[in-house]
Image (cartoon, rainbow, N blue to C red):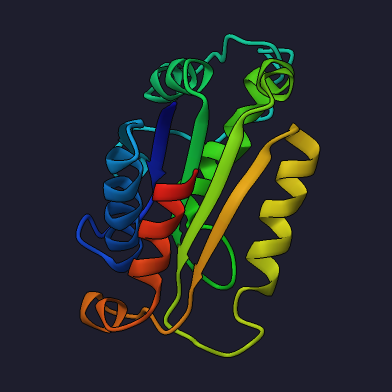
Length: 177
């Protein structure tokens, strides 16, 4: 299976990307072909709502979203990786999700397998409630097939994250998708 990991942290060596590394190792050990697209360090602009694309593309903006679109349409599974910022996706990942508008129908028809990996500083029992709901709503709306979620609480720094159960859970998810 071809898996596209979409990282979105502004910190290349941050906690969410550490969890992604463990997922990738597990997926590759299971024989999957994995590639990474780091939207946290790409040139991707917000949707302007101009409707130039008519929800079926192309988008009028000339940025790296066209490359991500091509990769998404050629992959079997996408893994959304984000730090938790104010109980939601990073701005970088939310920008990408909003830009799905330009190929909404094609993406919905694809029935893409997906997973979510999140790292949050907080470890309250309610910390992941809103991002989990948002992701599951996206899955429902875009006909994504959720393969699993790693909702890493208490992952404020890389060293904190390394001491939690979440790197092992991310690895296990990668091995079993």
